[in-house]
Image 1 (spheres, rainbow, N blue to C red):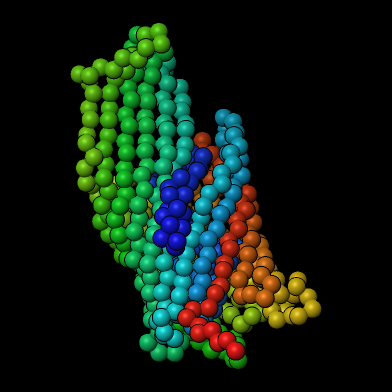
Image 2: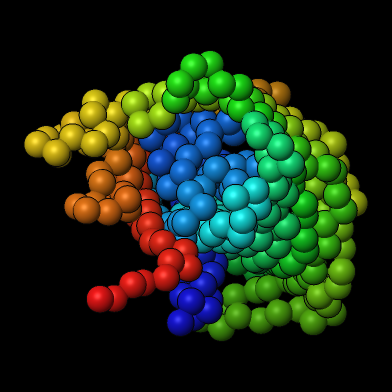
Length: 417
C-alpha cells in the first residue's frame, strides 16, 4: 500500500502547474527547501530539531525524532499571482502537490527518512512583435512547460550527545520542454519552429550537521550546516527544428530544412550549495530560527554552455513558533502553535543586468489533533518577486499551504489483559 501511495504522489508531483514568465530561464522556478511547519516561519529550518516533525532541509535533524515515532507528512499549496509590467498585467492561480515524507528511528543514535518534493517548475507563454527591413512584422513566441521532482532517502547518526551528522541521497527526475517560434506577417513566408526537450534523471548527495548547545533546562541553541558539492548531472536532450507554411487550413513542413536530434545523454553542471542556520529552542514553548542559503549557479553549465542570465542564488530567512501552553487541558487555543516569518531572496536570474529578487512574509498555525501528537500545519504567505523597472515584470502573490503531519508509534508491543 505504501509503495502505491509513493508512486501516486510521484506522478502527482510531475504534473505541477505554474504560470510564471520567470520560469523561462534555466531549469525553471526553483523551489525552496522549507516545508511542513517551517513554511509559516519564512522557511528557516537548517538549525531546527523537532521530536515529532520532519525537517528534510537538514538531514542531520533525523536523529531528533522521538525514538518511538513513525512520522508521515504530506502537503499541498495554492498560489494566486498578479503579474505586472509596463505593457499590462495578468492574473493566474495554481494548485500543486508540495511535499511527502516519512521518518522513522533505527536506534536512539540513528534515524532515517525518505520522501519526494518538487525541485523546479516551468510554465510560461510570452511573445513580442518585431519589425525587420524588407520583411515586415515578425511574431516571436516562446512556450515552456514541465516540472522536475526530488526524491530523497536520508540517514542521520549522532556519534555523541549534542552532535548529529546526516546525508540525503537525492534522485532528481522530470522533463521540461521549450518551444520557440518565429512567424512572419506575410503568409507566403515559412515560419520557423524549434522544440527542445530535456529529461532529468540523476543522483546528487547533500550533507548536514547540527550541534546542540544546552543553555539551561529545556533550552538549547542549535547550529545547523548543509552542503552539496558541484556535480555533473546527466540529462537526456533532444531537439527538433523545422520550417512550416500554412496555406488555407493546411500546414506544410519543409522536410529538407528539418533538423532532428535524437534523445542523447548530455550534462548539466549543478552548482555547489551551502547553508547555515541557528535555532533557539525552549522546548514546547518557543522556537526562533534564522538561515542563510547560497547556491553558486553562476558556475553552472547547461548542456556544456554557461548561461549569462543565470547568477548566484542567496536567501535569508527567519521565523518563530510560539505555544502558549503546550499541555493545557482546558484550552485548545493554548495548545495551538502560532508561527510567523520573513524571507528575502536574490534568485538565480539576472535579466537586463538586474538580479530578480523576492520578499515575503508568512504566518500560520499548527493545529494539534485531539489525543494525538499529529498536527495540521497551515501557512499563508504574501510576497512580491521582480520589478517593473528595467522593462521587467513583477509578481505580487498570495500563497496558502496545508501540511498534514501524522504521528504513530514504532514497534510498540501491545499488551492485552
